[in-house]
Length: 220
Image (cartoon, rainbow, N blue to C red; front, side):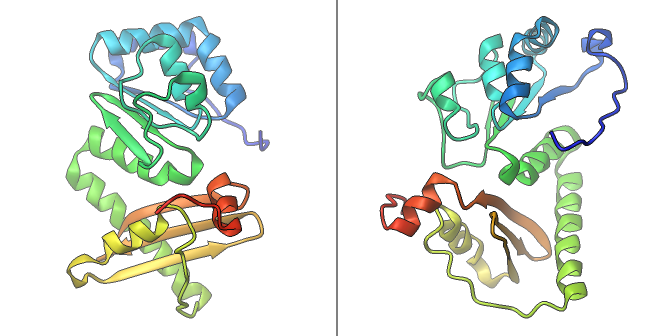
């Protein structure tokens, strides 16, 4: 979609499912439709489920899991895709949902959280904590390089973000709240004790933000 070349290790029909620990499906609706209709992908998903191995999907891709019959009872996905799957068990308020050995996430704005959960699942808690700190260091070094001045940001109108801020303020921990505001997006990262704790990207076109700005939001 963005003229980014992706070089594969092998063709999909050459994959040895017995050697896989996990399969993760990326999002994007057109790509998801391809994943849902591809017999080889669907067969791999079913085999992974049968072998009790890990399955992950982000953005629209949980739809492909549902087509294969491997989506767990509880899940999340890109807002509106649940209407193509089912609303029962859909969690709109959690960026990444783990139900059994199936991990689902909302989209590009929750990709860091999704990736961290995959790391914890496959590599353990020590590696998970190490990567969290490395991500935080990247953000903090960027702050220093850009010589940014700390600014108070009122996030009370953005769905769930104010909740995340209050949750991360416990125990008087050292907290950085970083916001990148552009004409297209609002990007927020929370860093506590030098480790990434929360990351979210929202388009100004996102319905919850439109509702909040118009005074019609029903979110707490």
